[in-house]
Image (cartoon, rainbow, N blue to C red; front, top):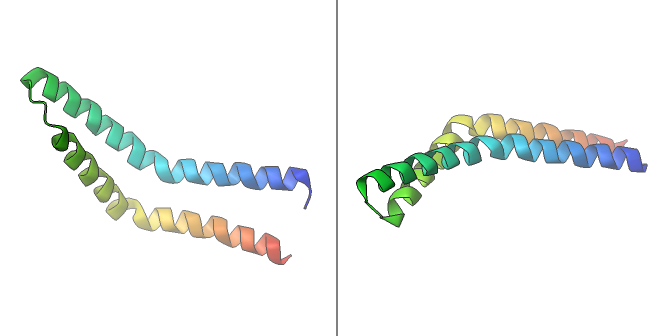
Length: 86
């Protein structure tokens, strides 16, 4: 393996991580901002309220997109193992 191939594998690995984490992070951030606006308007300052909603959103994203996430990760791992075998 040369430096170019290792760099390309690392770049692809970072891209896979971004693809897998982006839906959960973006949706939980959106829920957090919306709940912060709601709490500011209603003057309800309960910290567990935002945590419960964010946790619910992350679990729902994992339930809906978990198979796609696992398949993406398995494809990357298979490509890595195929390169190690050759």
